[in-house]
Image (cartoon, rainbow, N blue to C red; front, side, top):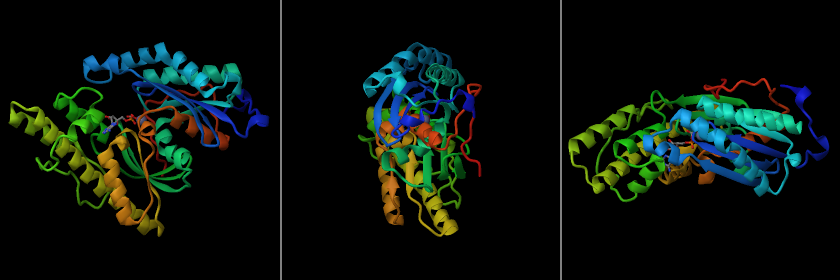
Length: 354
Ligand code: KG4
Ligand code: ZN
């Protein structure tokens, strides 16, 4: 909290505008969002061509690419929003978790902008950006149940309030997005692995290979995916000369196994909420993997069977973007919960505080 740095521009607080900056992995993104649920601009610059030759994100290259493009991306977000920097009421930047070089670039740029314009700075937890997106898109009330599945995290949480989370389950090894990316790499699928594997799976038979469903049927809400990944590796080795149809069948069968595991874990979480809280919570899927259509459909069906509302944000707001960071900034602004310019980026920053 650094109120001495803050000019609340109280005369313009309704509506107010927050610039969001995202730079925690391989997307440099900036967005202007208003507190009345409008996304005025949403620019995402991909670093895809920097990392593709290496088959994965190279942290040092990512940090450099963020530094090279962040000013251009932010300027575009301001221009496309049809505003000037003077119209902003706050700057929110991802403060972690993520690749520290990239987070440093975005957070430092955000602090400088806030300082120059004498407006508050908010360091946003990237996971909280994903977690609160459904409130921007669907004006959802607290509390709700959340499946957060991305490249680095797989968690099931109860979102109680801004900054207030109860963890019900997490991954014991690989995150779901990480498993998609690793299996894509094993199959020689180009980056970005997850979305390209999903495309290939459309041409495959999901019943062709019966891969293991780790932890299926267990009463908790945790995930474990490394055994599934290893089973895919064995199958690829066993097939030797793998045809393009084999690749499609393996992709479809892997994706089906992941869907079954996710549905089983989420069913437990829904039941647990109904039992513990004696009421049904709306169910939200967020994070990059929530862009996967098979997973969305499976969760929609599960929610229908359980008689609860299901919300998955539009695909462009599931994968990394800065509108979610700006919106989390709006939520924190509403609480007067600002950060000082002495905020230090955090490579690790757990969401839950239960
Ligand atoms: O949330 P996100 O954009 O970045 C992180 O915070 O990690 O999630 C990226 C992850 C990657 O592992 C990517 O392969 C996966 O989400 N992903 C997908 C799909 N789109 C992105 N996985 C499966 N199917 C997709 N359509
Ligand atoms: Zn993310």
